[in-house]
Length: 337
Length: 266
Image (cartoon, helix red, strand yellow):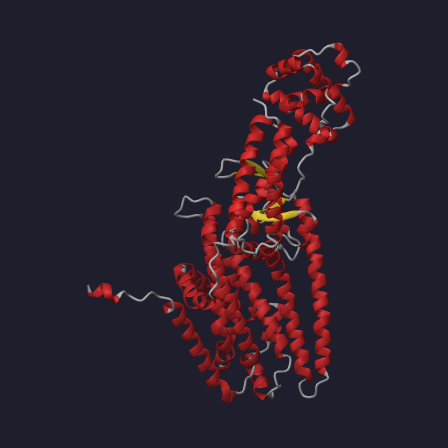
């Protein structure tokens, strides 16, 4: 059976044009929510056009009209199954106090591996420096060349310096925030390369901290070091570990251990968790950047106990937040029964 | 590059099967170049605006140096934000398009042909940081695009997206192609009926394709194709010489198509 193509096109064309117009309106303003009547009409037109396409392909085989209808159905299909409408409204407080810590705990093993790799690097850096102090300049990258200075000399200089009225602190703060955010995102996304570079980045950053830590402690500047690093490091380092955690979650998805799902399905499952982890790490880095610029860099000895206290309280609060926040309360009623 | 596919095939729950053409690496490169130029332009404009505000602020006594420093800080954050969020914001607002993609008629879609979710938009743009490595040469992204079947960079694989070519074709004007009254075969309905009876749907499809796409053919190929088709249709249903006299092969096939598809015209 052959279709009377001309008659068919004349009859159906108004429906196709109406659908094309609706699709175009949707594409131009995707956030507009259509009314129920509009949705029903859209659905009717989509089904009618789909049916026309099937008829045309089966009974006529006319290439040009088929191609036109294929494009139209493809666009309408995409709009009809758009997932904007199904997206839950974003609740920042709920996300911060429940989703983020819950997600963090769900991938606890990845975090343990991330922090473990970092401290392994630290131990390596400290040990290497203990046996050969000359290696210090090799470990410290050019952008941190000021760390090549003997710690006691730096401490003496810094403690004598007068308060500069936050001069150049905004620029410094902004540079730190953006740099650390880039490092954290990079630590996450390199997880795609089977986690190798995530481990490398964590280990490398660990070496740097290990070298600096050993250098200052060996020179008797433990108090200065703690007062310098703890206020911002208590947020900055965990944020980088969380970036590493997200990277290792990706690496796990790449390997696909313990699942028969295909790569795309494995990624679909972790997408929300990745965004939650990287979003949380980003917030922590913003705070760490502000603290580092406006608090950590001021080295008045009388101020050390307050800085250390601030950093310690912050770290404890973070540990408690990530460990306990968002835990579901036990159902007491159920227990009583 | 081996085993590359040029289109995304979709089978909808309604049983409809259709294809969406996948964008080539070349067109994606061109769109990217435009986007980089736009990012650069936005950054430069914002730099000038912030600079202007900071220079006015610098004149304020006591607060001048702090405002100037704040301006530098804001510029660093804005530069980072523009680079990172340009793709995210536009792809979300324009349903998978940026300025470059709009110009080259490309669109990011879900790999099942659906619209994009916000998560996918964010993930594919975050992974750009890996795709651009080393430095900003997009080496990893390019390699990924070349070796994956559907030309996906790593961000696309992670987000479950792909970039397609957007072709919004107009409905063909078949009525203009086959004008009523122009078909001399219509005066012999019994022969038209024999033609319809002896022509299979596949043969009709070939003839219709040849007529609708004739302008896409090279002149020699066009002559050759219509000569073969006309010869074939002359064999299966012979029309008298007074009807076919002076008809070119192409016109003969057009008449055949008209007789096959437009039964009401007789």
